Amino acid sequence: MIDILFTEMFWWFFGTAVVFTLFGRYMALKSYVVDAVTATIDSLIEDGYLKTRGTGANMVILKHTEWCKKDVDI
Image (spheres, rainbow, N blue to C red):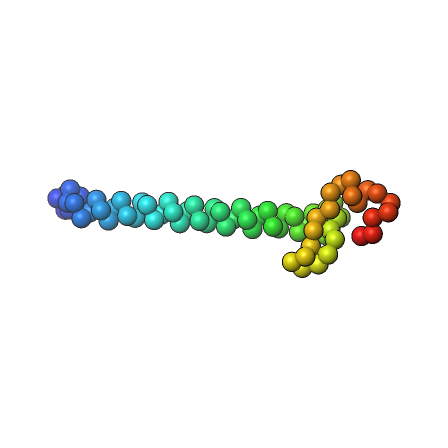
């Protein structure tokens, strides 16, 4: 059994498993961050902390100085 650990094929499989495990964790972390940021911004918009103009793909988040002016039509 111990002689299997010292074969070249074992180390290639082990190295490949480590590389793809790290790559998968990186991709999952990237996805989690995007989902968390999207949910946070949506929550801030719904709660009124951020003001927007437009809808859908044309939605733009307004700067604080823009929506504090009285003449801005939101």
